[in-house]
Amino acid sequence: MTTADDETDIIYRLADDCTRDDLDFDRWYLGTVNGVVDYGVFVDLSDAVSGLVHSSNLENDYDVGDEIVVAIEEERQNGDIALDEVAVETQQHRIEEVYHDFDITSITDLTGYVGETVHLQGQVIQIKQTDGPTIFHVNDGNGIIPCTAFVDPGVRAYPEIELDAYVRATGTVERRDESLQVELTDLTIIRDEKQSAVADRINAAISETAEPADVDPLIDWDALDKIYPDLHEVAQMLRRSVLEGRPIRIRHHADGDGMCASVPVYQALRSFINSYHLDEDAHQHLLRRLPSKAPFYEMEDSTRDLSHALEDRQRHGQKLPLLLMLDNGSTEEDTPAYETLRHYDVPIIVVDHHHPDPDAVDPLLEAHVNPYLHGEDYRVTTGMMSVELARMIDPSLTENLEHIPAVAGLADRSSAETMNDYLSLAADAGYEKATLENIGEALDYAAHWLRYNDGGYLIEDVLNLSGNDKQHQELVSLLSDQAQKAVNEQLDVALSHVEHQTLPNGIDLYQIDVDEYARRFEYPAPGKTTGAIHDQKVKENDTPAITIGYGPDFAVLRSDGVRLDIPTMVAELNEEIPGAGISGGGHLVVGSVKFVEGRRDEVLSALVEKMADAEIDEQVGSTTSAM
Ligand code: MN
Image (cartoon, rainbow, N blue to C red):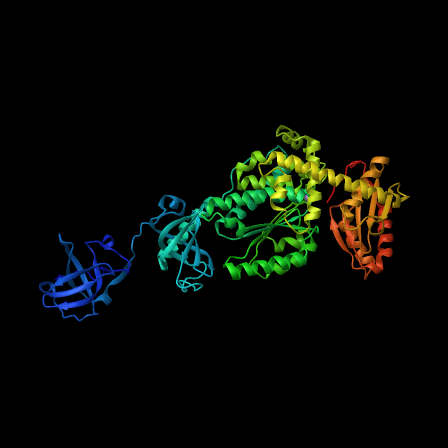
């Protein structure tokens, strides 16, 4: 018998899953009597650890089920453990739990354990109930792996384990095609101090891996340098989203620049997801690229996105997504859609170069990257920024992306002083200017016919981001030829219907009813048709010019050599003509206006009056910009 000489001594209690390895011979343990015999009592210390207190070492009487404090006398050669009773009042001592010290395997190392039993520690980030097993996706800060558990077909295994729980998972590592999974034999919630320790470790690992790659901009450019810290922050948020198992939805303007912006970021995120998930199909559920026809986030798109996200949460146990808006999303028109998403946990990030309304959108965004917020303008196109963003997420893409900023700049008619730097970067990568223009044209043409479809690998082929150079060349030449032919046919029809007048300020104004005098539902659509007419007229006359292409309830504006401010004009018109339902926007000198059909004539004449007040811009000369 051992007696207590210090009342502050600690009594330890082993957790059920503790083994002999967890025993410390100098400690006192709280056990439970599980058998009483003539020569002593048997005591359980855990499911797997028990021993005998010989009657010579016993002072008190015990029954089965009684608690008893013991010290360890010795571990005999035959493996039996001999215990001593410690005669103390347990309430006068602190009792501390001892947890089994599992040999935890990191998820990154699992490829080396196929067919073996492992213990993992991590957080449950997705629970998917299939018709067969339940699949728990476990994140340990180094990787994410699906762990399967089967009770009966379609029956939820471990119902006590909820999303975000910290767990210890024990099971066998299995390989299915290129993916790994763990078939569970045990899944236990980790609680208390142990839980905070695991959580801290996961968070530290995620914060470290979320740090973007250290890259330098593709070219030297002050304007881009100013924006770089913002892009770095966005790269970090996107990487973190992947590491936390949150899906990402990319919404982008469905034009040349918008695709040059979204495809590289999509590819970078895809490879980052694949590097972190041991399920090779993970990116199919976690990443989506969605084109938007309008130059803002329409309610039709946002309600559809939200509905899909809620369905994914319900059916696949996924977290709600992060929304990344590219080449779109900076204006007041976006706010109703953002407000809708704000009622759910959907963080929104915008990378755009359209003239922004930060007062309207910033309260609704996690991050807003826009050259105008740094005193720069649309010339820094979204494609140029997004290529840098993609490289911060996966720097190994750099070599494939060198021609993309030039395509983006040409497609959006950027007059950046660095266009030549981008063009020579592309030339070094093997792309002539004419080829880059054809890629832009092909993108535009493909986007027109794809409508709401993302065009997946087809668009990757057009941009030459799929690694099939021959396919790329054939496709671009085919699509750009067809596009050019379609534009010429549209111009043949439309040009004879263009009405011309010279405004008192000397500006040439061209107007056409694109609804009446251009082929509808064909390529190019009214916006691009107006642009093509405008370009033709500027080429012929080389004078300051404005072109208005209007339909029953809309007008598309293009201008050259004129100082316009379309967002301000729209705001003024709205006050001057009540009941006309005027809205619109775009860039300063290129944009569109919507109104109700019954007020068209008033809106158009008011618009022309404002044009007559516009100043001629000597500096801009004959350069143009497009949406
Ligand atoms: Mn753009």
